[in-house]
Length: 394
Image (cartoon, rainbow, N blue to C red; front, side, top):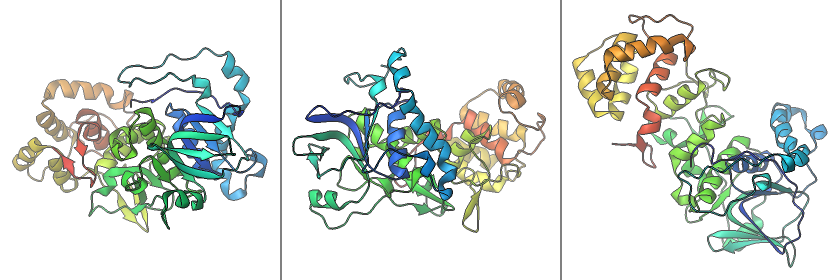
């Protein structure tokens, strides 16, 4: 699953003619999470149906406490107003590289919305799902995302309770933060992929209706299983994280680095690895990007990620983490030329990285600068795997 899974498309309201409608992802619900899940699944390139039990979203009825979400709602509804244009526009060619053999889907039909339509039953259909709309009309999907009342689902599964996806507090005493697929807006919290997946329930995601961040994570996770025709239990954490980051969806809950920051992506990636840890104050996480990086805070995390770093740090005790020493370390660990790296970094410093400081080998680096350089030259997020507990696999 490369960025983008991935085809851009437009919403076409669905007119039900067929007895059985087939889709990749079915999202059921009326709240923000359902909109976010269906929109992300669509953007990730799989055929998606959003089934609501109310009238079409009306921007004039958005409550004051949800005004911050207005741009998202506008973006969602914009697709419906462009239906006629989408039918006339040339269709993008699908990216077949590393793509499994699947039936090609018209990109203008990737997201369909069925408003104000109740469903009478949900049941298993193989490892997928079937939602009955009437006696003779139903929707079949590979993956179900439920952001609605679970009563009918509990009946189908013959169980008494089912808990929605749950978030966890950011705690560096454990490594599960490395398995994050979303920050949570309420403080220093994150959603682990394994807090989203349901044990023993394949291709089913159950999320609270008003948590938009969890909705987006659910959409990407559902899209991964559908796109690769696999089970949710076989989800690739790194691919799903990469997909969400590609859409500016934060994985780490840093209060002081937003998506408009030039170095946001590098900071998010390095933040996920824990090589640079946030400061947690009053249940909020601060990356402190302009604060100077210290030897003690990076020594052990980098040694955990790279064998060769253990030798380098043993040979270089308690030194300042200036640019010259950082270059020496990353070149030793990454088998790179010191002089060539110095030349490259001097060119990238202000032009590519957009740093406000001057290139100076003796300058102690800020946490921002160190994160960007390490992300660019060692790529700990992209190239180092972790297990389900967040432990580094080497």
